Length: 518
Image (cartoon, rainbow, N blue to C red; front, side, top):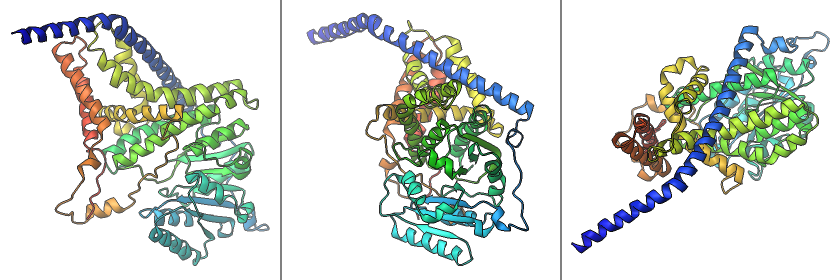
């Protein structure tokens, strides 16, 4: 009896302590965080609405790149012959690209440009000797057909892709070239790619970069497509048309070599060497052009593991670059104050930092936590209206996938966990700040395996499929949903249950394509 009384007394003391600390500490802290999250939501909302308005005007006015800049097709000259065509270097960086090396090399060798005015450079950093041998043999095969192709290797992988591209530019034959086109190993340009991009550079000496548009193996790639289409169709087109600046995608683009060199060349100080180069070139006064109607076939990550690594790099790198370059951008005297504001506030702060943090912190942590603290109210405009409008503005770039918008929201919230973590790692320059894991490519392997007879049994290590972070967040959201349904007044439980299920699905490894090993 005494033991039972003691337990009741202890429970009462704990409840009293909770009540005494809740008001001055948790409630006050949560109110401050809610205000910060609402402020970030408004920033993101204004940014999205602004870009939506700009893109509508661009469509109404018909402001195509060919109307904004001088463009004349490269023509044959009877007297000069092929020398009327500028020399172009094609760089293809590779790392153990067994599934796609033939596709990318074949596409590059198939470009319709005079054979004596193009040099194809395969930069092979492969560590697998068998793959290295296959890539080399493929280059020799094309060389035997009269293609000017160079197979280049180095002794180390210092600087990863940036290091390979930088080393590639050091070869003496590069001095013959005026422009360099870069294609990752999974990119396959159409034969007329150079004919549609090089004229911008020839006729407009102020332009440094011409960028083309960079899937659907599974539902996960459809989710990526919605995010990427917004990035390309809205963000890059707005940047190209209004400020002549956007972040280089690292592939499917053509650089003026003199501009690349003036900007300082390739640097490996972050994992977004492409964005780094673009920002430095922009600060030198160079302009960029985005050609939205020129598409280059490529492969989106089909496995959740590959996508997580890619998103870590794409979130950590920009945050780290922002930390390194913010002061340099402010002090720069070659670009206008308005362009500085755009690069620092809009391009970096809102899109690369605020967008990641507010998505996870607000919708996956703060909003669920308020169900336990009824004293903290989130206004409906912040919890429902603004997120809904932002979602619709994000989705308009991919109208064919509008029916998947609910899945996209849940999936983006799951990925925001890793993007937020990576953003803080980049800002704080923590342990994994320079981690570079090459995105796994499947090439035609998925089609081949789906067409073949599947093995009867596939053994999968459970540890490889479990993702504890996702499972932990999913459990918390599920608990919040149960509490809200039983005791709360917010009616968030429908969203909380759906979002928790999305985290559980990801946590148990049921997102993306699984390619069985036979």
